[in-house]
Length: 472
Image 1 (cartoon, helix red, strand yellow):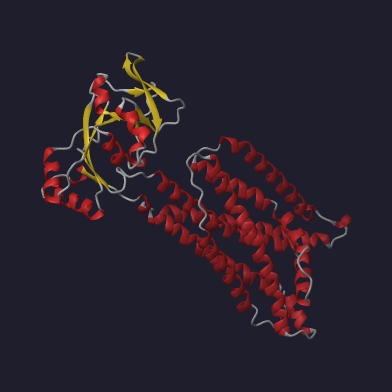
Image 2 (cartoon, rainbow, N blue to C red; image 1 turned 90 degrees about the vertical axis):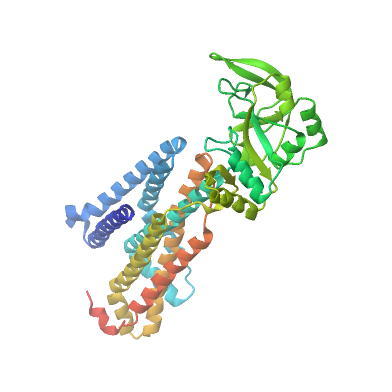
């Protein structure tokens, strides 16, 4: 956990330093606005310089994004892209916040007063929104990316066999026949019989390809019935006839109703047969590493190399599959020679990833409480003045709650703008990414964020009194 903790600490320190600089610049700007133009010192021009610098950096970051998008192809690049995107958005937060503040509802008197105060101190409001959005955007983006990567990993995990199947094979893989002792143990103790005996069009010296593409091995099975139960499909009459008459079923993306079988001949491919083909929705577990299937009789008629491979039993329940592996283990044999179906849903996610999510959430809650208390402390003199002129304490507290509610709402929307688009762009541009947004967890984080800010606001404003108008 050292690495994620260090990264989080560096991010927090950098954010605090940046926030301090922005607060100082905002304070300098307010003081400069009260000075006559002729008396302004070089220090009073600092806010305008910082604004120009901020706009320049935002333009540079936007240009970098537009240049980088067509070249995005790895997850680390996507994470760096998200950071640059967040920087570009946050640099323009003041220009985003001010128009929204002017459009806040003005129905109740407390709402009008809250809106006027926010507009009067728009620099402080913008910094509060940017700070909370940046902090809230971290866990939201992290959760979205983590869920997307988990779903992508699950989609890429394909079991060694199809559901309700087990495969007996040596440690060398499915291209070799299983040890006789393993077959006898499984059939003798579990009672499984009549396996589909896999055969492949290859030998130690050569192998058959479809169309010279090299996209997987070619299977050879004994009968159309074996093809159907092994591939977990229902063969049509036309498909059965095609196989029986010497054709082949394929699951590649090539067009046409005929395929050429070829053998390596030095640096080239030598065509040995052209067969009629039909497309088939073969079991996904067996599509990996294979490209087609024909009958063993067809392969031998064409004098193609045929090698024996694994034994596959179909119609096997989960209990029978577990019992087969346990029987092999009890017999002192290698249980990995019994390949059973395993759901891809249970992929392993390192605990450090969840720990990082929890750490980010704690940072969100802590920062939100600090920002809420700072807002109350900053306005204590102003709110104390309202109480001094006779306004009820409860009504004044309502003003500060409305202010912080508006800030939290803007921060939440901005955080979603920071967190969601980079993940969507990553899923769209990087092949095989499966977009998944955990809205339930995102909603939970947002609710906790609202509760923390508004709760801290209520607690901090409980002791407001008229004497606070003398606070500095």
